[in-house]
Length: 171
Image: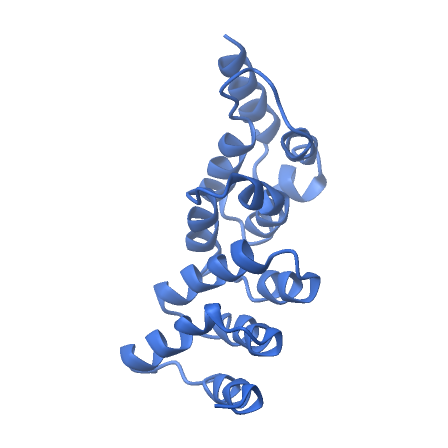
């Protein structure tokens, strides 16, 4: 079918909280769509739906096409308090550590905005993990983010968590 038709079909799923599992599966399978406009609309629509597999699909879009700035913005704007934890867990468990790393700061900020402390702790542990005692720039940026007012407001001991993880890794 034509990409514009698929894009419109995806848009029609918004505002329909009781989509059948079959329809949700069809929708989430579009993460592999070749047309960037279909993927963009999918990212917006997935944020409207409250099924676990839609959060996983958002994470897949982020990991697979996160270099597309428009799509990345659409995925981040589709995060909400119901899906942020599952999206973050999916991203963190990805074998594609470079892509996962690229989104840790965005996910930390969104988790803080939604008051999801456990999600933030998981992200901080990921950011401060080092197998060889060496740290990449994204990890240092994540640690620096611990002093931001948004992070401190949600997780007052964020800096302490980072320091403990860093000391533990260095030992």
